[in-house]
Length: 357
Image: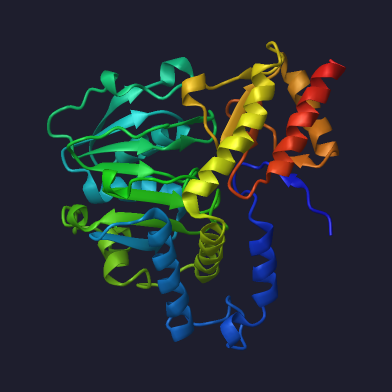
């Protein structure tokens, strides 16, 4: 069986141990004589698995009392709509650090007024704005932020605090490091970066915040529906949630989020060191104080050289290092399941490619 080094930005690498476990169980889930994709979401076997998934996520993130964990279909783009539909009444404040926060703000404008608390857009999203430059207007319903920016390769190193509710899209660094959940009123994360296949969003919502939600919405657009019906108002994405369960247990078995964060720091350092020591051959996009551990973005001298880099990398089974179509360049996504071995192989290739040119 051939396995390549997968640096795709999402869908992305999943832990090999998890893939093998899913494969072994696929025809007979938990001694039911049925595949996980065949069982009823109303069955005791499914409910036990979902309950365990919620419990394991709460353990990993140390979710305090007063929060619910739910599973929602539709991906992050649906959350761009849902958060505003539920909570935008007077105005929403957005910290614009990349394409996804920009899209969320634009989607929210359907429901009311939005504005930028801070933005790094004029500098091509190369950094995370400093809190000292934030301007939060009166009557702001919430602050919206994106924890990691896959396209531009920036990430919040620490999270700012506010005296109003905070909503955070954590899709691309969810479960990659410890997070103080109490700093947030709503966290959501599309699974297809660190946690599982595309098709499910994990949402963590504060009960007190939920009480402020707009109840004049179709039921499927209300977070309350997913909380009240324990994510099973309709058929949930059963296989995706099962896969999240496996990944959550894999993380727990490997030391939890603090241990994973340390490994992610080691992996990212391998690649950033090559960039920093290349004497400008590789040009990092993100400012050093804003660098992402999940997505390393960089450019070479010309688009032609970048294309050659991607082609030669693929020939050595280093897959997915082409930058996002909107910005070009190169990108290596180093999610939890990407191994240190894979990062070392990429670093060695980058050094060798530079010597060739």
